[in-house]
Image (cartoon, rainbow, N blue to C red; front, top):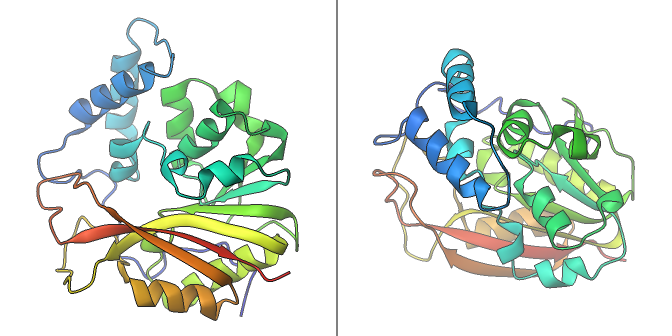
Length: 260
């Protein structure tokens, strides 16, 4: 198994970087997100909306769904979060996207010097910087590479938010989990969330949805197959984000441990 692979999208359908789901548009979603982020105290200068609209109309939004959920961190709602905040070790946000969860950790008092955020490209991270206007303040927390850059036992916590669902190939998911395993100290915790299907649910093909939607037993098998133990899974209701997002998906929150 090649644990140097960061994880990639080689098996995913061809990306549609300029297309939003039905009923969603860049001007509307950008306006909604900016209002959402202003609630965190971010102040935008006059004309900033137009500046960003022109930029992303010209360059495109690589992952439209990421823009649609920006400003809504998930980590603080996770059942393990309160315990994570009390930890004293280092945390890796593996597949950090826009950095929403990193900012939430800092807001909630997790020491910034113990946070590392990693992703395989700058697209979503830079989108977060543009919307939060905090590049200079937290740029040093982010690492980008197309291979996994961390050595064994560097972190006590690894957080994975909505990453499993965008890894189409089984081998790439195994690589991702092997990386998480390697990076954790003995006794370290992997926690996060991914799209799932509740018991009896049937997922229908959807060009706007993620390539991987897991049954509980599939998630369990993937985590235990990677060597993790003491697995807890909590099923949450999935709030649809667009008109055709109606295929009985749920969200599985998980927490599991690397044996000491």
